[in-house]
Image 1 (tube, rainbow, N blue to C red):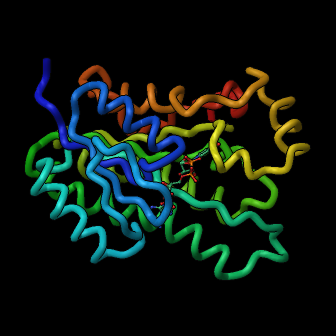
Image 2: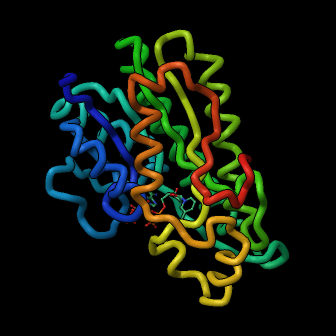
Length: 237
Ligand code: NDP
């Protein structure tokens, strides 16, 4: 069995992040999370409450994680929010907050994690995007912009630090059974299901399995990729 790795998954106290964490815990890895304000994570996870948009919080969290679990070898930037609104009604705050958490939070964690990865000469960065990043979605100009930017981030990371044993990829889920989709009105949920070739939403663990693969030794030559987990909705986008 391989040595346990220090794995940081942001927002792993619930939803997709919790499912991803369960996969790494099953492998025997040391899992940590930075989460915002909600329910506590699985007690086997080193949980740090804080805001990923705050540089000092991220720095302090990494220090705690490094002291307890060792340098982060696998980073899954999963924390994300939606503030859906039609374009003409979308406020600056609704736009800025989504960009700040989904894109800025990922950037701050990636920047900090890359320090130890460069030193170790290995690392896995997985950014949780969305099918709507490249498919588009009415009422989600802020959210889709933040998620498509992660594609540019993963590809630039690949070009900048890809020669140091570090991969950076985006996993782009479609509609997953979590509180984020449960919050959608029923008629919207039904309309989405009708447009998904698989005819259903996915379970969070179906996303987690793909993240686990990208973090594995078998995926060492995959970088700068966008892996859809969307039941065919985006047809490979
Ligand atoms: P949830 O709302 O269930 O979980 C979001 C997580 O992000 C929570 O753990 C939350 O912490 C954390 N979080 C939010 N803001 C911050 C912040 N500022 N600092 C630290 N942590 C924060 O969402 P999902 O599990 O559904 O989504 C996870 C990821 O998957 C997101 O990036 C989302 O955009 C993406 N996604 C989801 C899809 C879906 O259908 N559900 C589809 C496509 C992509 P807390 O609970 O403490 O507030």
